[in-house]
Length: 639
Image 1 (tube, rainbow, N blue to C red):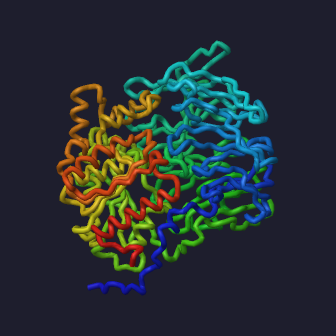
Image 2: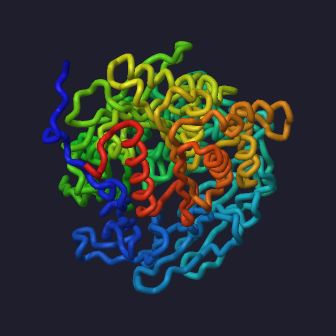
Image 3: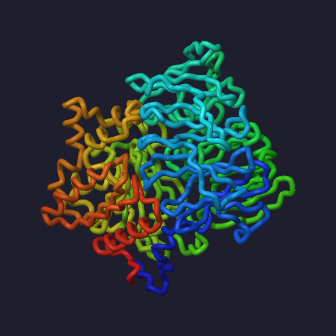
């Protein structure tokens, strides 16, 4: 028998705040002229944008944004060294507005360049090179349609470039802002790609593709810098997703980047803060490299100059390249790295001199040696489908008969990846084994894996989770009497399915902004999303307006089995959530409280679909700590 380690041999019990307070530094990028670095750091109790000279330290930096209610997480340099832009919503409602900061007068209030009515938002911001001093912005001033605008940054003057004509179609513009391609999505989810010719805008069919293996549509859809091609994420005749160029004249498809047995990683397009699928040249707009899914993310370099740069960057960390920015000359670079225990380490590198220096580590208080490695694992589902996942075992503890938390990702068309996950490390630090599984329907593991989830909500998708936990028990890692389940969004739905469809399996559960009623969830989604749901919710779950399909959806909804819940449950919800409305949580908690079933309910009045403010993250994870310590027996900050 393996001896239980003494308390003295256990790693440091980090405070909750050390995991979930805002990072000391994050999100760095270099200015186009290579003279300044911008980054995110706390000020006024929130994450704000700071700017400093490329050779200066934080003590020389100037805080240029002044948000006190909600932190800034996305900002943009402009081609004018005077202006910097950032996005902000209100208390998590996802109505993103674009604000301008004057770097010559950083104490002046920011200017809202996109005053819009509630329900409208900025979706994309990019340079508009034909008009220096301008940016190109996609926003839905007409609630159902995302039109393309040119905004003069200095004056705020806004001009329509392209008006979309139908919620199920979109026009893609070239680098000059001119219409180049048109995309139409049929009721069955098929995408038709057209070239746009001449001043009259005649459409010429190039290709039809798409279906259930593209739950968010074909990824990328980016016009090449010369306007003569369209980059797509496509499976073509492969199970794997590749980067493909669709020729505007001939419709010929050419593979730009592909790795046998690996799919393009699309998480950066669906999850803010994740590394991008493609890295682009600031100078030319061409693709430098692509990211593919693997046990560790895999970077495929495409550009010869960047290959030289990448070889030097790879010497700086044993992690995987994360964010990348360069000056216009592509000699000065600011990059960060993905790592399971040393997240976001950010470096400055000068390719002309081959000199580099560490700019910062976002969480210097967390010692990587005290954290837990994330190990890739593989096992078959009960029907033989190969499943991939990640197992994180608590440091300093014998890896056997542990309390286990099955942590379920959202989407469900997303995937877990080798990286630093605050919740994973927090739970491992508290003594839990943490298992993440890319159940069927998860992206990144081929089109057959994705499409295997059709009609399998609360069915084989849930079986995959149980099979994963059973695998951990059979390997001796997990104590079958101390298995918990937790997740957000779809992961919250999965936790509720766990305690309703398999009420005797889990000893504790956490539902974070999760779905309880699939039909109500779909009916309350923002209206502009519905035209894009053919390949995802309608195809995989059903249409709530068709009675027999609604009946099936209700049969797969935890709300219809709420009387089966007897597992201790923690529910967390943002009051301003526009994706999974608060009623989804209220309708679970109310009946449980009426029956006297243990349930703790946290509602954050200043949050939306997930908690962003650090005090709310700390509050949530303190509650998770207490909940699992009581019902699974892990370590607690009270020790």
